[in-house]
Every structure is written in C-alpha cells, then in structure tokens.
Image 1: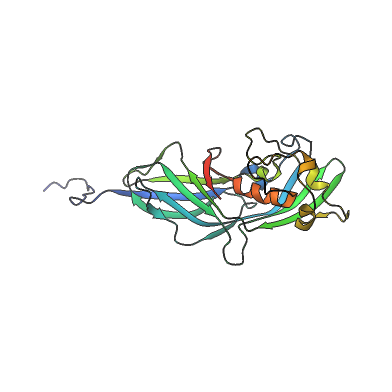
Image 2: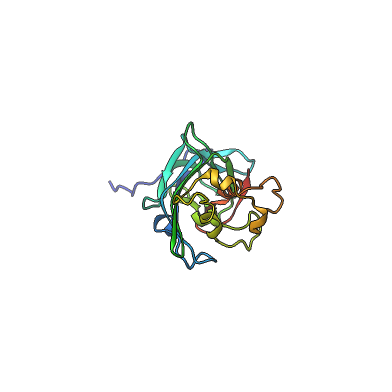
Length: 241
C-alpha cells in the first residue's frame, strides 16, 4: 500500500488562520542616541531610558472589530537592543487595512518615560521626564496580509527624535535642542519638567498649530510624545489623542 504525503485538511466552512507577530522597536536613535547631524542646531542626545507602556495592540477587520488583540499590556525599555516581541496572535488569514496600537499609562507606570543627556556645544544637561498622555495610533501598513498557515509581522516603531521637534503639526518641523537645554535655569545640570513648564512657548518661535492650549515647553514636549508612533519603520499612523 502506497502512503501519500500528509496534507492539511480544513473542515467545510472553517476559514484558514495564520499568525500575527507584533513587535516594537526604537531603532538606532533610541538605542545609540541622536547624533548632532540630526539636530538643526548641532545638539546631540542619548537615552539611558526610553520606556513606553503599550496597553493595546490589535488587528482590525473590515467592520472595525478586533480580529486579534494583545491580551495584556507591555512595558518596554527601547534602549535595550530590539526589536522587542509584544505578542504572537492567531488571526483569520486575509488582508487587513489597519493595525491599532495604544500608548497609555498602565497603573502607576507613565505612558512614556525618557531619561538621558542633551549636549549643545560645551554644555550638557541631564533629563528624566515622564508623561501620562494617552494616544491611540491607527496604522495602515503597506501590506498587512496574514497568510494561511503562515505569519506576518507588524512593528510599532517609536521615533525618539520626535521629542525634540520644534513644531506640533507642521510636516517641516525640525529637531532642536537648545531651548530645552537652556530651560535649566538654576544651572544645576538637570532640566526638570517643572523648569520646562516655566518656559513660555511663544518667544521660542515653536509652532503649536491648532493646539492653542499648549503655552509652555512642558506641555509642548508632552504633546510631542503623542507623535512618536509609526508603523514598520517610517509608515505614518493616524492619531486619536
């Protein structure tokens, strides 16, 4: 008797499934630092901590419901070499338009904590900032197809240089550090969030766009934390604040 090669049989009416692999990464600018050539004013920054609380990651089907969702929040320090796995989820094998991620506080943990040093010329200051912003990213990867019996990976890519942007909504925003360094008004070598809050935005020439309630530098940087999420590297995501 001749044995045939084994085959995978699907019961009638049973749709094939695959695996959605979800990960996050801060790329070199978080792991290794932001070099002077990235800054418009020649500053440079390094991170000793860049933690994000990812409270939701879901694959959204055509009617807006979740086809697959991460079971529990994850807190990741992106200064550690990545990419970092978040979840491996079974999902119906088909094409999807949207992956949704949420960066938000998780219990006592802030949504974003960034600590490190900022150097401009001969001057260096330390910073350690925590934010409780709540941001949902609606991302549309170039190709988000779960193959039957196979897997597809989607990455929430976090851009640390966005914390130093000089604009909130203009696409031509530049990376600048001087105003943040000069916020160390007591010259103790550390820029606190209280010091940022004491610096008005208007004299800096920073662009707030439609966010007229952002009137100080601390509120400005807090708002920038709601722009750090991208998908699969440079892919842009819609944002619900």
